[in-house]
Length: 535
Image (tube, rainbow, N blue to C red; front, side, top):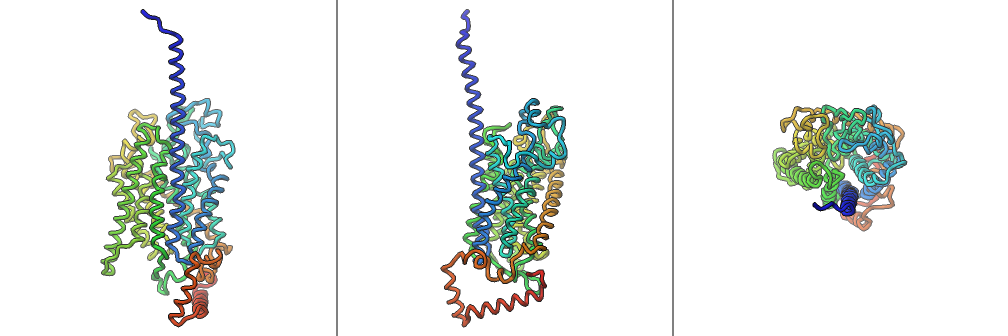
Protein backbone atom coordinates (compact mmCIF):
# COMPACT_ATOMS: atom_id res chain seq x y z
CA UNK A 1 0.00 0.00 0.00
CA UNK A 2 1.46 3.33 -1.09
CA UNK A 3 2.24 5.98 1.50
CA UNK A 4 0.76 9.45 0.94
CA UNK A 5 3.37 12.04 -0.05
CA UNK A 6 3.35 14.70 2.73
CA UNK A 7 4.81 17.30 0.37
CA UNK A 8 2.05 16.70 -2.16
CA UNK A 9 -0.54 16.98 0.59
CA UNK A 10 0.94 20.30 1.72
CA UNK A 11 0.95 21.60 -1.85
CA UNK A 12 -2.65 20.53 -2.34
CA UNK A 13 -3.69 22.22 0.91
CA UNK A 14 -1.83 25.40 -0.05
CA UNK A 15 -3.49 25.45 -3.48
CA UNK A 16 -6.91 24.97 -1.89
CA UNK A 17 -6.28 27.85 0.50
CA UNK A 18 -5.01 30.03 -2.36
CA UNK A 19 -8.07 29.17 -4.41
CA UNK A 20 -10.47 29.97 -1.55
CA UNK A 21 -8.73 33.27 -0.74
CA UNK A 22 -8.69 34.38 -4.37
CA UNK A 23 -12.28 33.29 -4.90
CA UNK A 24 -13.37 35.36 -1.91
CA UNK A 25 -11.40 38.35 -3.20
CA UNK A 26 -12.82 37.94 -6.69
CA UNK A 27 -16.36 37.66 -5.34
CA UNK A 28 -15.88 40.84 -3.32
CA UNK A 29 -14.50 42.69 -6.36
CA UNK A 30 -17.40 41.56 -8.55
CA UNK A 31 -19.98 42.65 -5.99
CA UNK A 32 -18.24 46.00 -5.50
CA UNK A 33 -18.11 46.58 -9.25
CA UNK A 34 -21.77 45.64 -9.62
CA UNK A 35 -22.84 48.09 -6.93
CA UNK A 36 -20.67 50.90 -8.29
CA UNK A 37 -22.01 50.43 -11.82
CA UNK A 38 -25.54 50.49 -10.44
CA UNK A 39 -24.72 53.69 -8.55
CA UNK A 40 -23.52 55.32 -11.77
CA UNK A 41 -26.92 54.58 -13.33
CA UNK A 42 -28.76 55.98 -10.33
CA UNK A 43 -26.63 59.12 -10.41
CA UNK A 44 -27.48 59.55 -14.10
CA UNK A 45 -31.12 59.78 -13.05
CA UNK A 46 -30.23 63.37 -12.12
CA UNK A 47 -30.01 64.05 -15.85
CA UNK A 48 -33.44 62.48 -16.23
CA UNK A 49 -34.89 64.70 -13.53
CA UNK A 50 -33.25 67.74 -15.14
CA UNK A 51 -34.84 67.04 -18.53
CA UNK A 52 -38.19 66.11 -16.99
CA UNK A 53 -38.26 69.33 -14.99
CA UNK A 54 -36.99 71.54 -17.81
CA UNK A 55 -39.65 70.33 -20.20
CA UNK A 56 -42.44 70.58 -17.63
CA UNK A 57 -41.90 74.25 -16.73
CA UNK A 58 -42.40 77.31 -18.89
CA UNK A 59 -39.46 78.45 -21.01
CA UNK A 60 -38.80 81.45 -18.77
CA UNK A 61 -37.80 79.15 -15.89
CA UNK A 62 -35.82 76.43 -17.69
CA UNK A 63 -32.37 77.60 -16.56
CA UNK A 64 -33.47 77.85 -12.96
CA UNK A 65 -34.82 74.33 -12.67
CA UNK A 66 -31.80 72.76 -14.38
CA UNK A 67 -29.42 74.63 -12.07
CA UNK A 68 -31.37 73.29 -9.10
CA UNK A 69 -30.82 69.76 -10.36
CA UNK A 70 -27.08 70.33 -10.64
CA UNK A 71 -26.95 71.75 -7.14
CA UNK A 72 -28.97 68.83 -5.86
CA UNK A 73 -26.02 66.55 -6.56
CA UNK A 74 -23.57 69.04 -5.04
CA UNK A 75 -25.43 69.96 -1.85
CA UNK A 76 -26.64 66.38 -1.51
CA UNK A 77 -23.05 65.13 -1.59
CA UNK A 78 -21.94 67.60 1.09
CA UNK A 79 -24.87 66.75 3.34
CA UNK A 80 -24.37 63.00 2.90
CA UNK A 81 -20.69 63.45 3.75
CA UNK A 82 -21.37 65.47 6.90
CA UNK A 83 -24.18 63.55 8.59
CA UNK A 84 -26.25 61.66 6.04
CA UNK A 85 -24.29 58.43 5.96
CA UNK A 86 -23.68 58.52 9.72
CA UNK A 87 -27.37 58.86 10.58
CA UNK A 88 -28.41 56.22 8.04
CA UNK A 89 -25.68 53.58 8.28
CA UNK A 90 -23.30 54.69 11.03
CA UNK A 91 -23.97 51.51 12.97
CA UNK A 92 -21.77 50.04 15.71
CA UNK A 93 -20.45 47.43 13.30
CA UNK A 94 -21.08 46.00 9.88
CA UNK A 95 -19.46 42.71 10.91
CA UNK A 96 -22.43 41.07 12.69
CA UNK A 97 -24.98 39.62 10.31
CA UNK A 98 -27.41 36.76 10.32
CA UNK A 99 -25.20 34.79 7.95
CA UNK A 100 -21.78 35.51 9.45
CA UNK A 101 -20.90 36.82 12.88
CA UNK A 102 -18.00 36.75 15.25
CA UNK A 103 -18.54 37.79 18.86
CA UNK A 104 -14.97 39.00 19.41
CA UNK A 105 -15.07 41.16 16.26
CA UNK A 106 -18.44 42.58 17.20
CA UNK A 107 -17.21 43.38 20.70
CA UNK A 108 -14.16 45.17 19.34
CA UNK A 109 -16.44 47.31 17.19
CA UNK A 110 -18.76 48.31 19.98
CA UNK A 111 -21.58 45.83 20.04
CA UNK A 112 -24.36 45.08 19.46
CA UNK A 113 -24.34 42.84 22.54
CA UNK A 114 -25.85 42.55 25.10
CA UNK A 115 -28.79 43.89 23.11
CA UNK A 116 -30.02 46.50 20.68
CA UNK A 117 -30.35 49.95 22.21
CA UNK A 118 -33.26 52.22 21.38
CA UNK A 119 -30.95 54.83 19.85
CA UNK A 120 -29.40 52.27 17.49
CA UNK A 121 -32.87 51.27 16.33
CA UNK A 122 -33.77 54.91 15.59
CA UNK A 123 -30.63 56.50 14.12
CA UNK A 124 -26.99 55.79 13.33
CA UNK A 125 -24.29 57.61 15.26
CA UNK A 126 -20.88 56.83 13.71
CA UNK A 127 -18.71 57.77 10.72
CA UNK A 128 -19.60 61.47 10.59
CA UNK A 129 -17.59 63.06 7.75
CA UNK A 130 -16.53 59.46 6.99
CA UNK A 131 -14.35 59.31 10.10
CA UNK A 132 -13.08 55.84 11.06
CA UNK A 133 -14.85 54.41 8.05
CA UNK A 134 -13.51 51.22 6.49
CA UNK A 135 -12.44 51.91 2.90
CA UNK A 136 -13.99 48.61 1.85
CA UNK A 137 -17.41 50.20 2.43
CA UNK A 138 -16.79 53.29 0.30
CA UNK A 139 -18.71 51.74 -2.60
CA UNK A 140 -21.77 51.53 -0.34
CA UNK A 141 -21.33 55.17 0.68
CA UNK A 142 -21.43 56.19 -2.98
CA UNK A 143 -24.39 53.99 -3.89
CA UNK A 144 -26.47 55.19 -0.96
CA UNK A 145 -25.56 58.82 -1.68
CA UNK A 146 -27.18 58.53 -5.12
CA UNK A 147 -30.41 57.42 -3.45
CA UNK A 148 -30.38 60.32 -0.99
CA UNK A 149 -29.82 62.82 -3.78
CA UNK A 150 -32.63 61.28 -5.81
CA UNK A 151 -35.10 61.63 -2.95
CA UNK A 152 -34.25 65.29 -2.43
CA UNK A 153 -34.47 66.10 -6.16
CA UNK A 154 -38.15 65.17 -6.21
CA UNK A 155 -39.10 68.31 -4.29
CA UNK A 156 -37.70 70.76 -6.86
CA UNK A 157 -40.42 69.92 -9.38
CA UNK A 158 -43.28 70.51 -6.96
CA UNK A 159 -42.13 74.02 -6.01
CA UNK A 160 -40.90 74.99 -9.47
CA UNK A 161 -41.31 78.47 -10.99
CA UNK A 162 -41.88 80.38 -7.74
CA UNK A 163 -39.38 79.07 -5.17
CA UNK A 164 -36.42 81.20 -4.09
CA UNK A 165 -32.96 79.89 -4.81
CA UNK A 166 -31.86 80.25 -1.17
CA UNK A 167 -34.75 78.16 0.11
CA UNK A 168 -33.87 75.35 -2.28
CA UNK A 169 -30.40 75.09 -0.79
CA UNK A 170 -31.80 75.03 2.74
CA UNK A 171 -34.47 72.38 2.23
CA UNK A 172 -32.07 70.23 0.21
CA UNK A 173 -29.68 70.23 3.15
CA UNK A 174 -32.45 69.52 5.64
CA UNK A 175 -33.65 66.46 3.72
CA UNK A 176 -30.25 64.87 3.09
CA UNK A 177 -28.66 65.87 6.40
CA UNK A 178 -31.43 64.50 8.58
CA UNK A 179 -34.90 63.63 7.25
CA UNK A 180 -33.99 61.01 4.65
CA UNK A 181 -31.14 59.31 6.58
CA UNK A 182 -33.32 58.54 9.58
CA UNK A 183 -35.96 56.83 7.44
CA UNK A 184 -33.24 54.95 5.54
CA UNK A 185 -31.91 53.73 8.89
CA UNK A 186 -35.34 52.52 9.97
CA UNK A 187 -35.98 50.43 6.86
CA UNK A 188 -32.52 49.38 5.59
CA UNK A 189 -30.01 49.37 8.42
CA UNK A 190 -29.52 45.98 10.08
CA UNK A 191 -30.26 47.84 13.32
CA UNK A 192 -33.34 49.82 12.17
CA UNK A 193 -36.56 49.15 14.06
CA UNK A 194 -38.59 48.58 10.87
CA UNK A 195 -35.87 46.77 8.97
CA UNK A 196 -36.26 43.24 7.65
CA UNK A 197 -32.42 43.10 7.57
CA UNK A 198 -32.04 43.06 11.37
CA UNK A 199 -29.04 41.04 12.49
CA UNK A 200 -28.11 38.36 14.98
CA UNK A 201 -27.65 39.43 18.60
CA UNK A 202 -24.17 38.20 19.53
CA UNK A 203 -25.11 37.76 23.18
CA UNK A 204 -28.03 35.39 22.67
CA UNK A 205 -27.24 34.26 19.12
CA UNK A 206 -30.90 34.83 18.34
CA UNK A 207 -32.53 37.08 15.79
CA UNK A 208 -33.50 40.54 16.87
CA UNK A 209 -37.25 40.90 17.06
CA UNK A 210 -38.59 41.84 13.62
CA UNK A 211 -41.39 44.39 13.64
CA UNK A 212 -44.72 42.54 13.21
CA UNK A 213 -42.63 39.41 12.79
CA UNK A 214 -41.45 40.48 9.35
CA UNK A 215 -40.10 44.02 9.16
CA UNK A 216 -41.13 46.21 6.26
CA UNK A 217 -40.48 44.84 2.78
CA UNK A 218 -39.10 47.88 0.97
CA UNK A 219 -36.38 46.59 -1.30
CA UNK A 220 -35.36 49.72 -3.20
CA UNK A 221 -36.93 52.76 -1.59
CA UNK A 222 -40.68 53.35 -1.69
CA UNK A 223 -40.52 54.61 1.90
CA UNK A 224 -37.10 56.24 2.21
CA UNK A 225 -36.87 57.77 -1.28
CA UNK A 226 -40.32 58.19 -2.78
CA UNK A 227 -42.48 58.76 0.28
CA UNK A 228 -39.96 61.16 1.80
CA UNK A 229 -39.50 63.05 -1.48
CA UNK A 230 -43.20 63.02 -2.36
CA UNK A 231 -44.48 64.11 1.05
CA UNK A 232 -41.80 66.79 1.36
CA UNK A 233 -43.07 67.97 -2.04
CA UNK A 234 -46.62 68.10 -0.68
CA UNK A 235 -45.51 70.16 2.31
CA UNK A 236 -43.51 72.53 0.13
CA UNK A 237 -46.14 73.06 -2.56
CA UNK A 238 -48.91 73.55 0.00
CA UNK A 239 -47.01 76.10 2.09
CA UNK A 240 -45.64 77.90 -0.97
CA UNK A 241 -49.01 78.25 -2.66
CA UNK A 242 -49.89 78.05 -6.36
CA UNK A 243 -48.24 79.91 -9.18
CA UNK A 244 -49.83 83.21 -10.15
CA UNK A 245 -52.68 82.47 -12.53
CA UNK A 246 -52.87 78.73 -11.79
CA UNK A 247 -56.44 79.11 -10.52
CA UNK A 248 -59.11 81.54 -11.71
CA UNK A 249 -61.27 83.71 -9.47
CA UNK A 250 -63.67 80.81 -8.91
CA UNK A 251 -60.85 78.47 -7.87
CA UNK A 252 -60.89 76.44 -11.07
CA UNK A 253 -57.52 75.25 -12.41
CA UNK A 254 -56.05 77.11 -15.37
CA UNK A 255 -53.85 75.03 -17.65
CA UNK A 256 -50.12 75.88 -17.46
CA UNK A 257 -48.38 73.36 -19.70
CA UNK A 258 -44.65 72.92 -19.84
CA UNK A 259 -42.81 74.40 -22.78
CA UNK A 260 -41.24 71.26 -24.27
CA UNK A 261 -42.91 67.84 -24.26
CA UNK A 262 -39.89 66.32 -26.01
CA UNK A 263 -37.61 67.21 -23.10
CA UNK A 264 -40.17 65.86 -20.66
CA UNK A 265 -40.33 62.47 -22.38
CA UNK A 266 -36.55 62.37 -22.73
CA UNK A 267 -36.45 62.78 -18.96
CA UNK A 268 -38.91 59.91 -18.53
CA UNK A 269 -36.75 57.56 -20.59
CA UNK A 270 -33.55 58.60 -18.80
CA UNK A 271 -35.22 57.95 -15.47
CA UNK A 272 -36.55 54.60 -16.66
CA UNK A 273 -33.04 53.67 -17.77
CA UNK A 274 -31.58 54.78 -14.44
CA UNK A 275 -34.12 52.65 -12.61
CA UNK A 276 -32.22 49.57 -13.81
CA UNK A 277 -29.49 50.66 -11.41
CA UNK A 278 -31.93 51.80 -8.75
CA UNK A 279 -33.85 48.53 -8.37
CA UNK A 280 -31.57 45.65 -9.47
CA UNK A 281 -28.55 47.40 -7.94
CA UNK A 282 -30.22 47.33 -4.53
CA UNK A 283 -29.13 43.71 -4.20
CA UNK A 284 -25.72 45.28 -3.36
CA UNK A 285 -24.22 42.00 -4.58
CA UNK A 286 -24.43 39.75 -7.62
CA UNK A 287 -22.63 36.58 -6.52
CA UNK A 288 -23.94 35.98 -2.99
CA UNK A 289 -27.14 34.71 -1.43
CA UNK A 290 -29.34 31.76 -0.63
CA UNK A 291 -30.35 31.80 -4.26
CA UNK A 292 -27.65 33.57 -6.25
CA UNK A 293 -28.28 37.31 -6.18
CA UNK A 294 -27.77 37.38 -9.94
CA UNK A 295 -31.12 35.62 -10.24
CA UNK A 296 -32.69 38.07 -7.82
CA UNK A 297 -31.31 41.01 -9.81
CA UNK A 298 -32.63 39.52 -13.06
CA UNK A 299 -36.10 39.06 -11.57
CA UNK A 300 -36.01 42.63 -10.29
CA UNK A 301 -35.10 43.96 -13.75
CA UNK A 302 -38.01 42.05 -15.31
CA UNK A 303 -40.48 43.24 -12.68
CA UNK A 304 -39.25 46.81 -13.04
CA UNK A 305 -39.87 46.71 -16.79
CA UNK A 306 -43.32 45.18 -16.42
CA UNK A 307 -44.32 47.66 -13.73
CA UNK A 308 -43.31 50.65 -15.87
CA UNK A 309 -45.11 49.33 -18.95
CA UNK A 310 -48.36 48.50 -17.16
CA UNK A 311 -48.32 51.81 -15.31
CA UNK A 312 -47.92 53.74 -18.56
CA UNK A 313 -50.66 51.86 -20.40
CA UNK A 314 -53.10 51.95 -17.50
CA UNK A 315 -52.71 55.70 -17.06
CA UNK A 316 -52.95 56.37 -20.80
CA UNK A 317 -56.22 54.47 -21.20
CA UNK A 318 -57.72 55.72 -17.93
CA UNK A 319 -57.04 59.32 -18.97
CA UNK A 320 -58.44 58.71 -22.44
CA UNK A 321 -61.64 57.28 -20.96
CA UNK A 322 -61.91 60.15 -18.47
CA UNK A 323 -61.55 62.76 -21.22
CA UNK A 324 -64.05 60.97 -23.42
CA UNK A 325 -66.76 60.66 -20.77
CA UNK A 326 -66.28 64.17 -19.35
CA UNK A 327 -65.48 66.18 -22.49
CA UNK A 328 -66.63 63.92 -25.29
CA UNK A 329 -63.23 63.85 -27.00
CA UNK A 330 -60.53 61.21 -27.32
CA UNK A 331 -57.14 62.49 -26.14
CA UNK A 332 -53.99 60.34 -25.96
CA UNK A 333 -52.00 62.43 -23.50
CA UNK A 334 -48.23 62.16 -23.91
CA UNK A 335 -47.28 63.78 -20.59
CA UNK A 336 -49.78 61.70 -18.64
CA UNK A 337 -48.42 58.52 -20.25
CA UNK A 338 -44.90 59.46 -19.21
CA UNK A 339 -45.97 60.15 -15.64
CA UNK A 340 -47.86 56.85 -15.66
CA UNK A 341 -44.65 55.02 -16.52
CA UNK A 342 -42.89 56.78 -13.65
CA UNK A 343 -45.75 55.92 -11.30
CA UNK A 344 -45.47 52.27 -12.32
CA UNK A 345 -41.74 52.38 -11.65
CA UNK A 346 -42.27 53.95 -8.24
CA UNK A 347 -44.97 51.42 -7.33
CA UNK A 348 -42.78 48.42 -8.18
CA UNK A 349 -39.67 49.85 -6.48
CA UNK A 350 -40.48 48.58 -2.98
CA UNK A 351 -41.76 45.06 -3.79
CA UNK A 352 -39.70 44.42 -6.95
CA UNK A 353 -37.60 41.61 -5.42
CA UNK A 354 -40.46 39.85 -3.66
CA UNK A 355 -43.25 39.53 -6.23
CA UNK A 356 -43.90 37.38 -9.27
CA UNK A 357 -44.19 38.89 -12.74
CA UNK A 358 -48.00 38.74 -12.89
CA UNK A 359 -48.14 40.66 -9.61
CA UNK A 360 -45.69 43.24 -10.99
CA UNK A 361 -48.13 43.92 -13.83
CA UNK A 362 -50.99 44.48 -11.39
CA UNK A 363 -48.86 46.62 -9.08
CA UNK A 364 -47.70 48.86 -11.94
CA UNK A 365 -51.21 49.26 -13.36
CA UNK A 366 -52.71 50.15 -9.99
CA UNK A 367 -49.78 52.52 -9.49
CA UNK A 368 -50.89 54.34 -12.65
CA UNK A 369 -54.46 54.50 -11.36
CA UNK A 370 -53.30 55.81 -7.98
CA UNK A 371 -51.26 58.50 -9.75
CA UNK A 372 -54.26 59.57 -11.83
CA UNK A 373 -56.57 59.84 -8.81
CA UNK A 374 -53.96 61.53 -6.59
CA UNK A 375 -53.21 64.09 -9.30
CA UNK A 376 -56.88 65.03 -9.59
CA UNK A 377 -57.30 65.23 -5.81
CA UNK A 378 -54.23 67.45 -5.43
CA UNK A 379 -55.29 69.90 -8.10
CA UNK A 380 -59.09 70.02 -7.83
CA UNK A 381 -59.76 69.25 -4.18
CA UNK A 382 -56.65 70.38 -2.28
CA UNK A 383 -55.79 73.18 -4.75
CA UNK A 384 -52.12 72.22 -4.58
CA UNK A 385 -50.10 73.40 -7.59
CA UNK A 386 -47.51 70.76 -8.52
CA UNK A 387 -46.04 71.49 -11.97
CA UNK A 388 -44.54 68.00 -12.31
CA UNK A 389 -47.17 65.96 -10.44
CA UNK A 390 -44.32 64.85 -8.17
CA UNK A 391 -46.66 64.37 -5.21
CA UNK A 392 -48.98 62.01 -7.06
CA UNK A 393 -46.16 60.09 -8.77
CA UNK A 394 -43.87 59.63 -5.78
CA UNK A 395 -45.99 59.86 -2.62
CA UNK A 396 -49.12 58.29 -4.09
CA UNK A 397 -47.48 55.44 -5.98
CA UNK A 398 -44.86 55.02 -3.25
CA UNK A 399 -47.52 54.42 -0.59
CA UNK A 400 -49.24 51.93 -2.88
CA UNK A 401 -45.92 50.15 -3.49
CA UNK A 402 -45.44 49.54 0.23
CA UNK A 403 -48.98 48.18 0.54
CA UNK A 404 -48.40 45.98 -2.51
CA UNK A 405 -45.30 44.48 -0.92
CA UNK A 406 -47.34 43.45 2.10
CA UNK A 407 -50.00 42.00 -0.17
CA UNK A 408 -48.11 40.23 -2.98
CA UNK A 409 -44.75 39.20 -1.45
CA UNK A 410 -44.18 35.55 -2.40
CA UNK A 411 -42.81 33.07 0.21
CA UNK A 412 -39.76 31.79 -1.65
CA UNK A 413 -38.80 35.18 -3.04
CA UNK A 414 -38.73 36.84 0.39
CA UNK A 415 -36.36 34.16 1.68
CA UNK A 416 -34.16 34.53 -1.42
CA UNK A 417 -33.48 38.13 -0.41
CA UNK A 418 -33.37 38.07 3.38
CA UNK A 419 -32.38 34.45 3.96
CA UNK A 420 -34.12 32.06 6.35
CA UNK A 421 -35.64 33.48 9.51
CA UNK A 422 -33.34 32.63 12.46
CA UNK A 423 -34.88 30.92 15.45
CA UNK A 424 -37.55 29.06 13.46
CA UNK A 425 -37.72 25.43 12.39
CA UNK A 426 -38.51 25.99 8.72
CA UNK A 427 -36.85 29.41 8.39
CA UNK A 428 -39.87 30.73 6.48
CA UNK A 429 -40.30 34.49 6.59
CA UNK A 430 -43.66 36.24 6.51
CA UNK A 431 -45.19 36.84 3.09
CA UNK A 432 -48.08 38.72 1.48
CA UNK A 433 -51.64 38.10 2.62
CA UNK A 434 -52.85 37.65 -0.97
CA UNK A 435 -50.25 34.90 -1.28
CA UNK A 436 -51.62 33.14 1.81
CA UNK A 437 -49.75 35.06 4.50
CA UNK A 438 -51.15 36.12 7.85
CA UNK A 439 -51.12 39.87 7.24
CA UNK A 440 -47.98 40.58 9.26
CA UNK A 441 -46.09 41.99 6.27
CA UNK A 442 -49.04 44.25 5.42
CA UNK A 443 -49.25 45.45 9.03
CA UNK A 444 -45.56 46.37 8.95
CA UNK A 445 -46.11 48.27 5.69
CA UNK A 446 -49.07 50.23 7.07
CA UNK A 447 -47.16 51.22 10.20
CA UNK A 448 -44.23 52.27 8.01
CA UNK A 449 -46.52 54.48 5.92
CA UNK A 450 -47.93 56.17 9.01
CA UNK A 451 -44.62 56.84 10.75
CA UNK A 452 -42.74 57.94 7.61
CA UNK A 453 -45.63 60.25 6.73
CA UNK A 454 -45.69 61.73 10.22
CA UNK A 455 -41.90 62.08 10.29
CA UNK A 456 -41.61 63.78 6.91
CA UNK A 457 -44.62 66.08 7.14
CA UNK A 458 -43.97 66.78 10.81
CA UNK A 459 -40.50 68.13 10.05
CA UNK A 460 -40.77 69.59 6.57
CA UNK A 461 -44.09 71.45 6.97
CA UNK A 462 -42.89 73.62 9.89
CA UNK A 463 -39.55 74.03 8.13
CA UNK A 464 -41.22 75.40 4.99
CA UNK A 465 -43.48 77.60 7.12
CA UNK A 466 -40.42 79.07 8.80
CA UNK A 467 -38.85 79.82 5.41
CA UNK A 468 -42.05 81.55 4.35
CA UNK A 469 -42.27 83.50 7.60
CA UNK A 470 -38.78 84.96 7.21
CA UNK A 471 -39.36 85.74 3.52
CA UNK A 472 -36.94 83.19 2.09
CA UNK A 473 -39.38 80.83 0.40
CA UNK A 474 -41.12 82.58 -2.49
CA UNK A 475 -39.97 85.07 -5.10
CA UNK A 476 -41.84 88.32 -5.58
CA UNK A 477 -44.80 88.43 -8.00
CA UNK A 478 -42.76 90.66 -10.31
CA UNK A 479 -39.93 88.13 -10.52
CA UNK A 480 -42.38 85.26 -10.96
CA UNK A 481 -44.13 87.03 -13.83
CA UNK A 482 -40.89 87.99 -15.55
CA UNK A 483 -39.38 84.56 -15.10
CA UNK A 484 -36.58 83.32 -12.88
CA UNK A 485 -34.11 82.94 -15.74
CA UNK A 486 -34.10 86.63 -16.67
CA UNK A 487 -34.36 87.76 -13.05
CA UNK A 488 -31.67 85.59 -11.48
CA UNK A 489 -29.73 83.59 -14.07
CA UNK A 490 -28.46 86.04 -16.65
CA UNK A 491 -31.12 85.69 -19.31
CA UNK A 492 -33.34 83.24 -21.11
CA UNK A 493 -32.38 79.62 -21.76
CA UNK A 494 -33.38 80.33 -25.37
CA UNK A 495 -31.81 83.70 -26.26
CA UNK A 496 -32.42 83.18 -29.98
CA UNK A 497 -36.16 83.27 -29.27
CA UNK A 498 -36.15 86.64 -27.53
CA UNK A 499 -36.23 88.68 -30.73
CA UNK A 500 -39.14 86.68 -32.07
CA UNK A 501 -41.29 87.69 -29.13
CA UNK A 502 -41.13 91.34 -30.09
CA UNK A 503 -42.10 90.60 -33.70
CA UNK A 504 -45.01 88.49 -32.50
CA UNK A 505 -46.26 91.36 -30.34
CA UNK A 506 -46.01 93.79 -33.24
CA UNK A 507 -48.21 91.54 -35.36
CA UNK A 508 -50.96 92.04 -32.78
CA UNK A 509 -50.45 95.78 -32.57
CA UNK A 510 -48.70 95.53 -29.19
CA UNK A 511 -45.38 96.61 -27.76
CA UNK A 512 -43.28 95.23 -24.91
CA UNK A 513 -44.08 98.33 -22.83
CA UNK A 514 -47.81 97.74 -23.26
CA UNK A 515 -47.45 94.14 -22.12
CA UNK A 516 -45.33 95.19 -19.13
CA UNK A 517 -48.02 97.67 -18.07
CA UNK A 518 -50.69 94.99 -18.32
CA UNK A 519 -48.57 92.63 -16.22
CA UNK A 520 -47.98 95.35 -13.63
CA UNK A 521 -51.72 96.06 -13.43
CA UNK A 522 -52.48 92.36 -13.02
CA UNK A 523 -49.86 92.02 -10.29
CA UNK A 524 -51.22 95.02 -8.42
CA UNK A 525 -54.70 93.52 -8.57
CA UNK A 526 -53.32 90.19 -7.37
CA UNK A 527 -51.61 91.83 -4.39
CA UNK A 528 -54.79 93.63 -3.36
CA UNK A 529 -56.85 90.45 -3.59
CA UNK A 530 -54.34 88.22 -1.79
CA UNK A 531 -52.71 90.60 0.66
CA UNK A 532 -49.11 90.66 1.83
CA UNK A 533 -48.91 86.85 1.87
CA UNK A 534 -48.88 86.87 -1.91
CA UNK A 535 -45.54 88.67 -2.04
